[in-house]
Length: 454
Image (tube, rainbow, N blue to C red; front, side, top):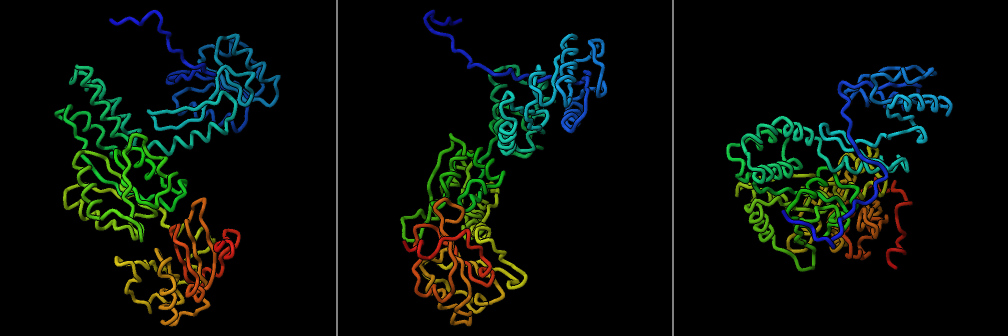
């Protein structure tokens, strides 16, 4: 056994404001007294935890004999006199007590709870700020998939059997570590089979690729599923347009590869991206292909899915908020307002050769359809000319948004004829919306054209 050198200080635990403990209340009695909404909620909580409730009424009287056979006491009183009487009686009986919203009469506090029972997470601010505790709880809620409860239940059920099958502690620990990793990204029904497979030391973690929509830029627009994919990834291949704040949410240990493609700039070939994903997945890695907006809208996702599935690699898809919908929210318009737009059409104004693609421009010029144009900054003048040639009114309202849902984003309204001569800067990704719905755009979300040119 190794001894610590005498001159080596013992690492101290930082001071704790409270000690987090978890009390098994099954078969225990809790005395409750008083009245109020807070008490009713706490009674539900205690019952859910397996406690038997004994109601001591609203006004007492309370004395230590009332607390015989009681494990905890909970009260809710408007006045300090009632709280004091209840607390002192509990204290005299040696029963821990909590009086709701009266810290002076509390031996313990209830924390904010994340319930994935048998996984239970509790957060305490030691009474400093319950609202802050709730905010922390909400953040943790986003990190824990609902299926984690099933994984924990399987672990509890099979723990003894696994110990009998694998007596070696280090080997058993390796199985549990693999089990814990899988709990965050694999279906709940795989929990039991993963623990009880015939060869527990065989690494069954097969590689996979998940196409994830990063949204337009604001990290708060990510879906919970996208966040969990980022936090369980081994490698992330991300586009040039993915914001830093989205990448900051990814697992710290994940390797990050920039594979962006931007018009007029050096870009990764799609074939190289496909082969990189394939190679990593074949190595057993969890690969996230992170795309700006939604992966299924002008993101070449179809090519990637077909390539990977042909090679036998499983592919999951996590949708994201596409730029058009985020821009519509910024402008405050409904793309399918029933008074002026019976449909919406998404097109790209940038072909493989970098020019305006050959589309059915007559269909695009339908005044009853909102036209959404991706990648149209360079070809906007030609786009406008084609639409006008096909009969669309030159005065048709237009919304232009650059860097949608980003701190440095800009947005403004104009008309179709103005696109013939206006030059749109290409330092940020551009979305152009054409149609009567943009006549109703709210001005508070937009910068004036003069500000854009400045």
